[in-house]
Image 1 (cartoon, rainbow, N blue to C red):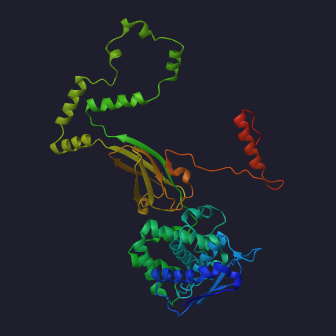
Image 2 (cartoon, rainbow, N blue to C red):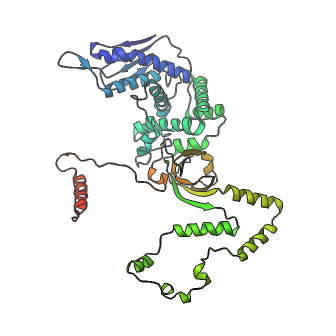
Image 3 (tube, rainbow, N blue to C red):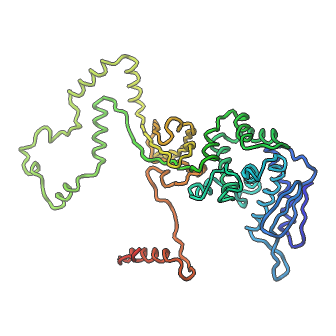
Length: 447
């Protein structure tokens, strides 16, 4: 039986949502772990912004606010908080009340696993109002200096919330959505919960069970995310666009001429023309010869005969391969990646074609196995590609998205202009002054 206890100060915030959220949390957690084994689950209003869990009973806030006309209302943030805190505290019935890990030693096995599942339940309650720790939200912590590995003993944690709640939640989200896939991860996670309910698992038990149940080697993932302070930063450094030479001069020379004509003209020649200066060969046509009428991309019988000799030296199989390649006329791209953050992660690559159509290519984390710091990848495409983007949906906790795009793009940001306390905001005022003077053509203020 799901029950809620609250005074009249709880208002409709509690009467409409508390028990419903308890039911929802039990249903979601039971689906991902095991059937809730106890006869009751209770949510009690305590009127403060927080929550606490015990077996079968939780204490949660906030309450509705009394208005001058005697009614009680609540804000959207208060509604969000109540829903999230009830889901989270009810979730503790499963972790660590039943799957009984040691929070004093390994807080993440309690708060991290529970925060991961309460995020799943929150999205299933209402994705428009519930919030959760997305991988993109943990990047600031992962590049900060005051951090320790997740596997640090709880009393020695420096940033407790980010280490015990946020980073494990992001790691498990990535493991489920990006690395293993939902079906495999959910099966393994449920196996862990069922295998270790009413027992005392350690981190090694969790790691081992996830690997045994899924059949996936995750040693590299546990090491990177749980035992180091490395972060994710995969940079797309360079892209080389190539085209296969056919050796047929009538094809290759035409391509070379096209590429040459696409280059910008010489600025010196253009300025001579603007000044009305005519070249000597233009003023004296008698000095012009064959080479002035035909550029270096003009095909002659010399090149054609050389091509026929080349074909004669190929066997039938090689000739068929070359003819097929010439007929398909594909585009070749070599992409250079570097792993600047240290964590090995799958490369999620979005390809945008000249038509505007986009395609996603996923390369598993094992691609870094032989070259952990940098690698090259060949893409062969029948269509010309306009650009590339790494981790376009921000699902892999990449800490620096500026190097995710090729060609590079302008990263959107904003400048806030507001009244600040005396003695603060000097940098903002100087920046606004510099923008104003830049627009008006004045000298900028000193930095």
